[in-house]
Amino acid sequence: MLSAQEKLSESETFDIVLSDLRLPDGDGIMLLSWLKKEKILIPVIIMTGYGEIQTAVSAIKLGAFDFLEKPINPSLLTQKIKSAFESVRDSKNTATKSTADTKSTDTQAIKRFSETGVKIVVGRSTLSKQMYSYIDLVAPTQMSVMIVGESGTGKEHVARMIHERSTRANAPFVAVDCGSLSTELAPSELFGHKKGSFTSAIEDKTGFFRDANGGTLFLDEVGNLPYGVQMQMLRSLQEKRIRSIGTSLDIDVDVRIITATNENLELAISEGKFREDLYHRLNEFMIRVPSLRECVEDIKLYAEHFREEANIELDKNVRYISDDAMEMLERYDWPGNLRELRNVIRRSVLFSSNDEITLENLPILTQSVQEIDNNIDIALFPKPENEKEKIITALKKTNGNKSKAAILLNIDRKTLYNKIHLYNIDL
Ligand SMILES: Nc1ncnc2c1ncn2[C@@H]1O[C@H](COP(=O)(O)OP(=O)(O)OP(=O)(O)O)[C@@H](O)[C@H]1O
Image 1 (cartoon, rainbow, N blue to C red):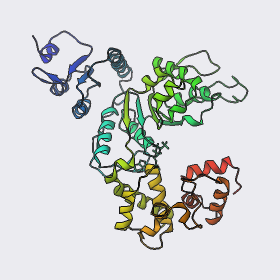
Image 2: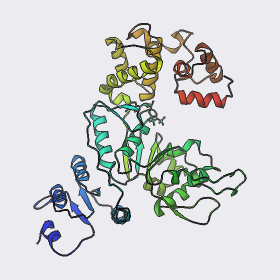
Image 3: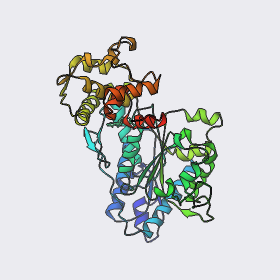
């Protein structure tokens, strides 16, 4: 029997290579290197066994189109072959478009700038490293990724990272909070509308799908996607076409979908709130973002990063976190994960009177809520009571400085803006 290399060297042409990772006379990685050396441009799908994730990462870096875990699911295989052919066709059509190189894996680097200019921390704990290896593995593919994890773990960051390390990095990343889509307006927000197609359609709207064309559409809190729009979403993803409201023409769109959720979508499916077919379409690859309490080794890294960030934002110069304060940070449970850690550090930077964060600056972690000095007990988290009054008090205490007021309230500045708007608070 001829080896794969021998077959591929013959004059016969092939449209696709499906290769096992382990071959009788070598492995899929050797085959990929050989194809690259010989400049044979055929899409390759590598089939891997359970737990061969690192090798699959190498395969993707060497230019494999995709990988598939064994046992092989025939419908998934058909779908991947179809995508491979479509991608060959697209690259022929846009021969001038650069096929961006996959960026190098560097899970050792402590910080790097994302393309949005925001500094991010790359955790070093075992679970974090595993998550980054999955990100590197899936980013260069066209797979739909579902990011799951508790609230505040950094799911949106992960979504941006996937986009930035994909071949779509130079195209738009459009983030949509599905919780803010109303049943009535969701179709128009997502797929656009033509001026005059309904009363409030005062001008043409492109919609998020077209805004993200060529790039990534990130659907945050996807469990909140109104049921009425789920079928339309599934059809658009399958057919790669959308139809704006008030038009009769389908438009081709090329978007990669990344979703995030902190709820159990299987439960939502069993309760009839989420379509199972859409769930499978969105969940071609799942990434779980670990909670902070599972990554205690990373807490120091994040705490120091948030301290530096707060110094810049609040014009302070807090240079250290004392050993006992750090110990307390590492012992705490962090139900609100990174978002809560960030808020706690920003508060302690604000309240610190010298250049060090000490245990006394961490009242929220060291005392019961009742014991906390009344002056600063206006945090909305974890007790979201009397919100409006607390917001007004915080704004008065900080002379209207919203950054500082948000810290007193223990919420994000964006959340504060939303609440000021919600309660119609005059500034
Ligand atoms: N790797 C990181 N480096 C630095 N800051 C981070 C990182 N990941 C997340 N953060 C910060 O933690 C906070 C929470 O992150 P993010 O909003 O991405 O979480 P989330 O899981 O999407 O939250 P939710 O479930 O509420 O939507 C944000 O302030 C973000 O800036």
